[in-house]
Amino acid sequence: MPTFVVEVMPKAELLDPQGKAVAGVLARTGKGQFTDVRVGKRFEISTDAAADDATLAAIHEIARDVLSNQVIEDVVSITTLSPSIAEPAGTGKATPGAAPGAATQGDRGIA
Amino acid sequence: MRIGVVTFPGSLDDRDALRGIRLAGAEPVALWHGDHDLQGVDAIVLPGGFSYGDYLRCGAIASFSPIMAEVTEAANRGVPVLGICNGFQMLTEARLLPGGLIRNDHGAFVCRDQRLRVENVSTSWTNGFQASAEIIIPLKNGEGSFIASAEELKRLEGEGRVVFRYLGLNPNGSLNDIAGITNAGGNVVGLMPHPEHATEPGFGPDTPAAMSSGVDGLTFFTSAMATLTAAAG
Image 1 (cartoon, each protein chain N blue to C red):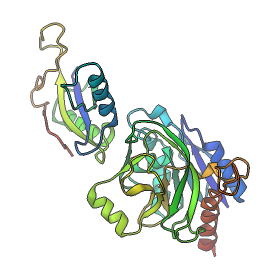
Image 2 (cartoon, rainbow over the protein chains, first blue to last red; image 1 turned 120 degrees about the horizontal axis):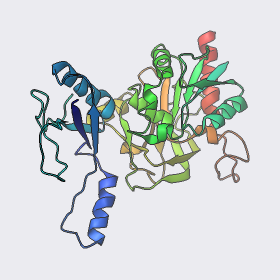
Image 3 (cartoon, chains in turn purple, orange; image 1 turned 180 degrees about the vertical axis):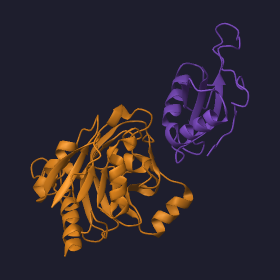
Image 4 (cartoon, chains in turn red, purple; image 1 turned 60 degrees about the horizontal axis):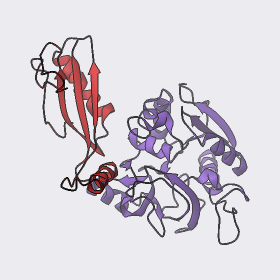
């Protein structure tokens, strides 16, 4: 059962008050070397369908039309999580490209 | 003359909108988000609130509601549609109005009696105002900062589609002090301030004349009634 991971970020040119508030905490807690924080969203979507081109196309459509608002946000990546690919325990790391043909990474501004 | 107000899960100001419509002299009709039925209303209000708890994006989930198919169809054939606050956010999510609303630039929720200038008095919801009228309408939002691409902003300004502008301090960082806009047809209007909270003396915003005396919101609804009367005649 493939799980797709879609990441959405506020557009780079827009003010991100959430990120600004988090950056303020870092400055107040002695971590002022980190100056810029932006807060986005990560969606994990599972399906019983095969991880084929049609499913991937549907994920792209959902990412564009539902998970993001292209006026204010960008879809920055669409990847897959695959339980069959072993990851070092505790890293929680996604596995881009685990399903053949089902990953597009870093395609900012997918539309 | 029947004006419908759609209630969504998490709507707050649907009852106030229904009441404002009655005070303005029209018949208020309660509509339900899950229906595919506008009950033959002549105009539609999408009210303020926090539909679906603002999950995903403000107004986003509501914009996929069953009744939004009928609202979109009605908007496209010229029926007056007013989106207030969360309703404005729904209209942008449904692409019935351009641009978007993001978190206030100062990060805080703002609640105040807001001075506005009416920049366009030819829309279905503002034709009762004098040109460049200054009005006071309560404002209350956390994500009311209007943004649009430079190109879209230029188009809105060039076509006179900015309907309301904030006067005094910009309360949320909206570009060009924009508080409300309209579509090309002038029948769909969205704004962040709440006209339904300025419809009855004693319960409205403070004005220079007296406390709680502001009733500038009534003109939104009487304007829609005038539009409908003109269309019927």
